[in-house]
Each structure stands twice: as C-alpha cells, then as structure tokens.
Length: 593
Image (cartoon, rainbow, N blue to C red; front, side, top):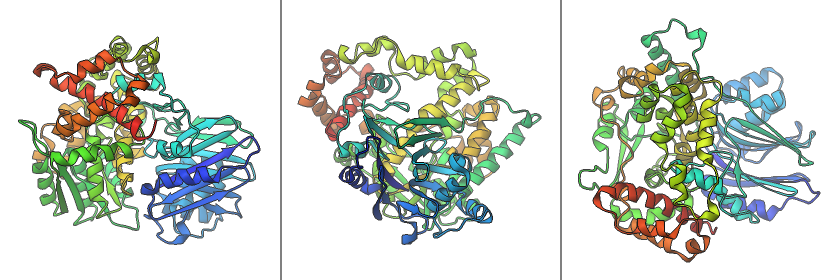
C-alpha cells in the first residue's frame, strides 16, 4: 500500500523532476516508510512506500528490471502473488525479491496487457515498457485503489491522490459543472472519470490505459460481470447459495491475510464486520486486534454501537480496542479530515473513519473492513422498492429513492454560471441501468451500486481516511470472485430477511442471533448529522468566506436560507444539505482552489 506518481512527456521535453517530487512528497502519509524516483527520457515515476510485504529494500519502488526492459510503481496488494510467482517461475522467470510488486512486473513480462487478468487484489499500476516506449496504467476491478490523471498539451501526470496533482501545479482548478451536478444530486458522489475539478480525471475501475511516447492513447475495460442467471447454477436452492457464498467469503477473508505484518479488523458491531471477525477466527486467526469507535449521544440518537461490537469481541476473544471521542474532538477533526480527502466527500461518517484510522494505525498497519456488503448483497431499503419495479421504470424508481435533488431542484441551488441545461445525473443513471448485462431491475441497480457508486463513496472514503495515517484497509466483500458469484445469485436470496438474506444465513452458522437480527445501523456521529456547535461554525465560515463568495457556486439566497435556523420539521434535511455545500467549500479552500 503506497502512493504512486509520475509524468509522461510527448513534446520532446524532459519530465519535470521537481513536479514529480512534489507529488510524491504530498503523499508521504500513504507511504511513510520510504520514497524513490526513476526516470527514462520521456517518463518519470515517483513512489512512497508502506512496508507490508517484503519489508526489505528488495521491495523498494520504483522497481526496475533492466533485463526485462520494465519499470513500475504499484499501489495496493496482490493477494495471489505467491501462486503467481510459482507459475511464473515454472515459465522460466526469476525473482530478486519476495514482493508482490515484482510479481506484477514479471506478470506483465509474461502476459503483456493481459497481466491484469491474472491479478487477484486491489491495485493501481503505472508500468513503463521501455522497448515498446509505452506507459501502461491499470486499476483494479472494483476501484479500491485510486489513480488520478491531469492531462495538458504534450504532458500527462498521474498520482494516487488529487491533491498530489495540485501540488505539482499547472492544473485547471475550475469546478466542473457536470461533476457539481453529480455531487449535489447523488450524495456527493462524482463517478469516474470525472472529478469536481475540470483539470483532473480518474481512471475508471477495471480499466487499462496504454499511453504511447508520442501521446497516442487507447484503453479498455478488462472485467465486467454479468448480472444475470448463469445456467451453471441451475438447480441451486437457498441452501446451495448459502454454501457457495459462504465458501467464497471464507476464501476472500483468507486471501486478505497475506502480509508480513499483523492484520486487524475494523469492528463496527454490524453484520458485515462481525462476520469477518467470525470467519477469521474460524480460519485460525485467534486474538485478533479489533477496533470500534463511538461519539457522544444526542437525545434519542445513540453515538456508538459498542453493545454489539463488545458482544462480538467477547464471543471471539479478540484483543479489542474501544475508542470513544467527545463532540469537542470533532471541530479540529473536521479540518484534518477535509485536508485528507482526495475528493470532497459529504458522508457524515468520513470524519469518524479518519479518527478511527488514526487510532488503529498506532497498533497495526493492515486491517480488514466490511465495506461493500450492502451494495453487493442488497442491503439498502431502495433495493426492495426496485424489486417491485419493471426494468423500464428502474431509473425513475432509483432516482426518486436515492437522489438528494431532482434536476429542477438542483438548478435552484446552483448559480446559473454552473448550471447544466440537461439532467446529466439522471441521464447517467438511466444509461447505466438500461445497459445490457442485467436481468432484472434489482440486478441493474446492484450493478450500478457496485461498479459506479461504490468506488466513489465508501471505497474512496475508507482509502483516503486510512491512508492518511499509513493504514492499509482490505475489503473482503469486494473480492472479485465473491462479487461475480453475488451478481449471478437470484435477487430474492439477497433481498430476503430485509436485505442481505444470503449473508445472514451464512452468519447464522457463526454469529450470535442478536448481531444478525439487530436493526440496521450506520456509523453514528450525531454532532455531524445535526451540523451544530463547532461543526456548524466551520461550515458557516466556509460558506461565508471571501473565496466562496468569489467562486459563487451556489445561489446566495439558497445559502442564506440554509444558514437561517430551520424549523424543527426541516432540521435534519436542512442540516444534511448545509453539510454537503459547506463540505465542498471547505475542501476547495483547504486545497487552495
């Protein structure tokens, strides 16, 4: 787990070493254990290292093999690297380290651009093929590891974070109106390839981009599961699906133990993280280090789920760390969290993840987490609404259930200078849901959740917040084989028992019923959900700042209406909208935009 950066020049100029160094230094937290730089005549690579596999200098990056004519920087972890190394040795290749990084490099030497087909894991790769004078960029199937791009005439820069590209300079930092439309419509999500800034894009998940030294570019998507019934599964009943999903999840959890350092678990007390603890215990990982966080309660709104996390910790005798923070800790934490965001993220729990990661990183370098289970296994309420919808009506049902605002409502928020003439967010959803490869409305929405939304909400949130503290978080529910199997699973098995039914059946074999049948919870941070106290002061300050007024993203009358005290019936909705707008301005200002 690391930070990667680089620059390619197509105009005959030498890559800017100072710019690459600035990008690399901006990602020090992602890789506090070392740094390096490598260059050719037209391309330069930078790297910050977090030592997890092969702790020796042999695993340092950038990694070059002159005998193969290859060099690369790599962020992530390839869980099947021991098996791949054996396969590549049998094919006649040699190795100079025990790292997964070198396995990625040699896999390219063996299979060319198809090397990604052989990798099981999370990764972003930038590889220089010197004989063919090309740069190969690749991102993992579920988009767990990020890769940002800034293109200008004669030049391409790339990095693991957007702020790293800003540190290099010479980026168009104007706000992209289409991205702003997505952000305000879609719970602050801006799907790839866009970002909130006009001058920065991100490589979509499951994509390989090949860049020639003369600037020519081609790319392709290398993985896209079918969300339809597979004849190979004909005759499987609920019990068979429970067994198949359980076996795939056990494999996913075991895969993510690959490391030369201890692996912990972020234990919220919900079904997903609790199931990971149970399966790890079943795999022989006893006395796991587990971590939970809680905040001050507010009225009837609980600020923690310690009752459930404590129950799981006792059941499996984990080395449990319960972290409690007060509302007074949140004001300073918001600013630090915003600075760590690689893109603006409006979810309330992003601050909690930042604070949790800070504490966890003091004990372990690697942890498993339950992100992705709701998207893959139909854990949200709107999935049930879609079960009653005909496929042609899926887009209308989804946007009604999920969007923060419709197109008309959004144009009452955004200044006309940033308004879109058409409903670009609604059109994006409609096109994705109508694409072939999904059998039912629920299948189509689960595909959208998993492959379009997930990488740019919970996955990005966890990666940004954990890597701000040099913590590598692994997500078993986003295992490629598990996701493919879940995509083929009939929706009724996932929708059963109020959602995630097949997972709950797996859990009944190993978890207390109280954890499985509890009401669905979310990361509770009452002070942020209500946007009051010091948090409100920060938001108001950001929206009133001279930079915000000059930028003029939002209609001033709308902002003033939100800043006025809402009546009790509108308090929650008004606070959420206030946080979303204020968070965007806080992020832009924190990064000098």
